[in-house]
Length: 147
Image 1: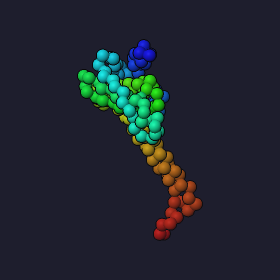
Image 2: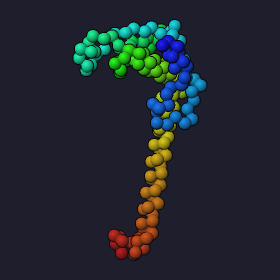
Image 3: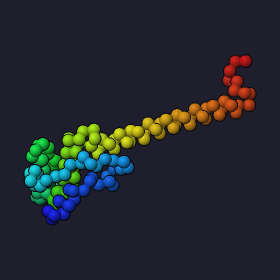
């Protein structure tokens, strides 16, 4: 199982998690060393009743150099929670180390550019429509105005 985790941690974050991944810079994305992680299992909380109260499948990770902590209890299986917790720790570590150059910040900036471009196009289309309507009025654009 550990070999699979090491292989997983060497890869960039999964692209399926984000809507657009074109032109993202993964060169600064950090890698995890197992020697830098402290891992403990605790009992989870939330809905599930006896199954949640009796099993210790909630994963608590601490990155020792930065003291960043992650608690993950999204799945019923501890193995899935281990993988998910490491993904979350990598994302949080990326945001901590790289700041505005992190993958999440790059995606947010990309979405912001798309949004402003979309608004600009909509405004341009509305202006064209308004000028066309004024040009095509039967009375030459003086409808509704005092003569």
